[in-house]
Image (tube, rainbow, N blue to C red; front, top):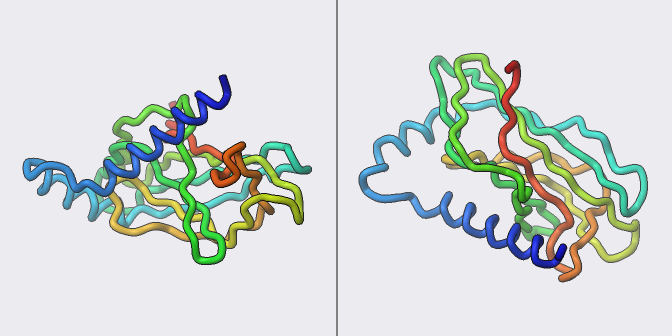
Length: 173
């Protein structure tokens, strides 16, 4: 049952990443460019998180997105997250419960999402990221942060990080 869930999550991540890169149809071009301009100006803060205390335990790292621009900015979709280890980028799938949708941030407003990961064994098989990369939906660039939470365990396929990313959470409701 877990293997099926993981496969579905991986497929969903692939579709989200493909959708981000597709550029959409010609009808969406003006709005996409306008959104990309405001999205690229959003402030992104990584952590601090609650680190997993021991191998096999779960840790959570919040990512806060703040609109410091002059007007509203809409995020349409899910955030993309990847680990970078030894020059290779490995995508993290969205959580199965993450729902894509529109999140509008007024001037000064914030939203957040959470990376949840399983700590791997030091010296064992796992991913040892140097960086974490966050790409907001519609953004033209990724935000990179130093990864200081240890080795990330791998799923049963031995390649995929045992981690997931939530959707955007509303604040202040």
